[in-house]
Image (cartoon, rainbow, N blue to C red):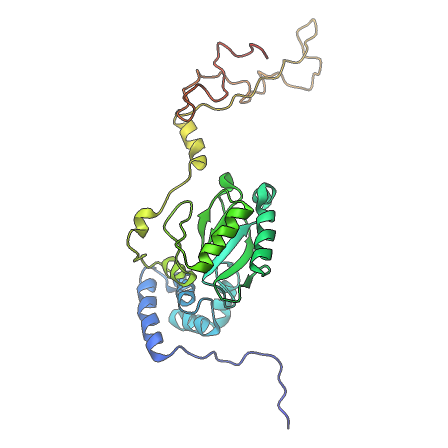
Length: 291
């Protein structure tokens, strides 16, 4: 009788070589000990096996399942839910171009199209030399700096098609690349180990890590009174009848419906970013002049 292949992967998955298994077990036990329940360690363990293989393999899934007493189906469900876990071999540098709304209209779509042509790959494809995997990704939570490109989850802000092409050229050539905020770029496997919770051993890397950018802190500076808010001119009051009522009885008066336009304005505070004067606002004594 001839065997018929149904296309189902051979099970169980092969195990790691003994020396690799012993090393990963030691690391995994360190990770698991951080949590009151072992199942909570699944996400960092997936990063751990990804740091070994470059993506989440069947062997890596088997390893996580055995270490946490889970089924391979449970591990697979988690590994395929989160996009930070790669499902197939990828490059040393994952270059993600944000194509969500704000980045797209600010130039993200143009950057992505230029990089596809420049690298000769499509979305979620890797260059022939195995250096760069290109993909479009959802919001990077850095809209203040749109359009944004990420390399192994590090930010490159305010990009253009030209700067993005120069960036990938540097990555392929092996030149040191520094993100807008943070330490120099390391490989995808090295990044995965850091995400698993192990310290970055590179000299100066931790000190180089950056915080929020200038634009992201504008609201905090405003809250502290360190910079003035932009004042929106107040709209004219609706016409009143002789009895004092508004022409539109169903519309509340400004006093009955206060808004930021109606609130008393504080005196303008000198803007540290604009020594020449306030950046837009008017004081209470000057509001209405020229409006």
